[in-house]
Length: 263
Image: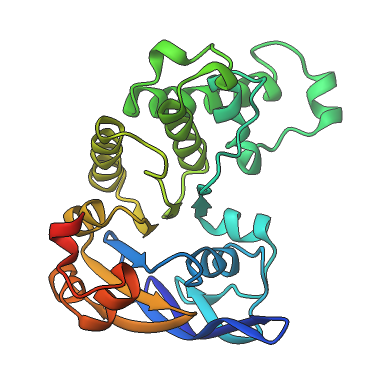
């Protein structure tokens, strides 16, 4: 059984094809990257995968189940989490509180039950402790101890991106969608992010589907790469194969030169 599969996926807006016949498979445990210039359809693809958009044609399979018609919360419950290109955190809440929000789909205590059962020994109290322990593991993994109680709105940009990554991990996903995790970062922050992504893959066994414009990062950490442009596939292959493809060079750089040397 294929872990994750997109089959002939297509969606259009106002007669413009945002995605046209996109197909690929992701093996469990790998880092699979999707590249392409601005407007190629990469984020639209992610929006289809996690249920924000409903594709007009094609299918999406996760562990053998069709998911293209499911709502975002149902897809998240299956084990698919996502970060966004633009930071989507609650700026007036602490790091810990933002990470705890990532646990909401796994919380069983409702408002009535939580109001009646007070104290650490109550069901609500025990559940709160268990979820906080999971969040503490993420804080340790991403080295966020120093900002656990700080409002995220006052944190450096790179740290905010890390908190958003942590919130996605709080869902305990099997498949993690990373939409330009290095966007807007300086060189040091990018290197740190590469380190965290590799750690997540190695220590947690999470499969990663990645969109990123930093080609050096893509080539360094990806097992396989899919290049798309104008919503259509160009080539799928190893990083070395993709970076040498003439259509990729033309679409991504606008000129015939090696991606690796330009990154």
